Image (tube, rainbow, N blue to C red; front, side, top):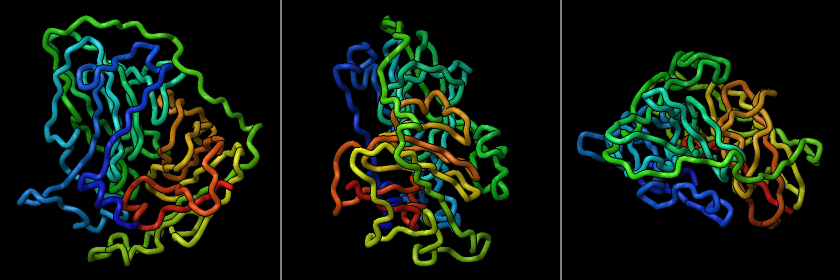
Length: 350
């Protein structure tokens, strides 16, 4: 409680890889470490003696911790040698606060087959895929022999939150950088089956007409102290971040959800920063972003969604099981320093 950011920084992060008979029936790449490779992307700052540099700058809490070194699976300057024509990459943004906009440096579109919690209904091709902290994506990468391609991170899209890169708060928020994530190298590749079904899985198709109610969650943060001298610690920040005007309290149940109900949760971002919003217990589908359809990579089952500044995202889900009036679930900002500073709440299913 209150130390998630530091614990993740020191290594408490990882992946679950989940398969079932349906997903295996598509004959996707599935040989772990050969053509099915997990990638956990994180950023860090280091002191001269090699120790972690954490919470040493005032923006670390207000803006979220950002490092100047990119690591993949704990490796600096990473590369992987691919052995087959098609490789499945299961990617987690495991950073405390950094948003990545992924793309290939050769301009080839990314072939997206999965999101946080499921395969997509249909494979999708996108030039860029944006991942907030805690979000996941599954890609299929096709390469030729004796090639090297960089998986890169690019600046935020110009329309992210209605602002151009670096426009938020004088450039202190938003990603304006282009940098490599990992190099994908090949030698002589084994031939692989490059066919892919037009349709993958069937997903729950909850509709707004089925929703028993809509709940609104407004992310708020007091911007006092920005630009002031000195370092803010957690005690200084207590109560400056919250959801619907409340900072996290273990003694408060913020919401009670009836078992079996279908609900729309509307996440409104009242701040000048992008926030990654995560809901425990359930998996949801994204209905829309400010009334616009979700991006193709957001059309699977998800549990985390990126909400841009001064915007709103609506998600829909069913609370089908795991009811307990005593033991709550949490919803929170997945920028870990914001979560630690109070941008979190609790709900029970009853």
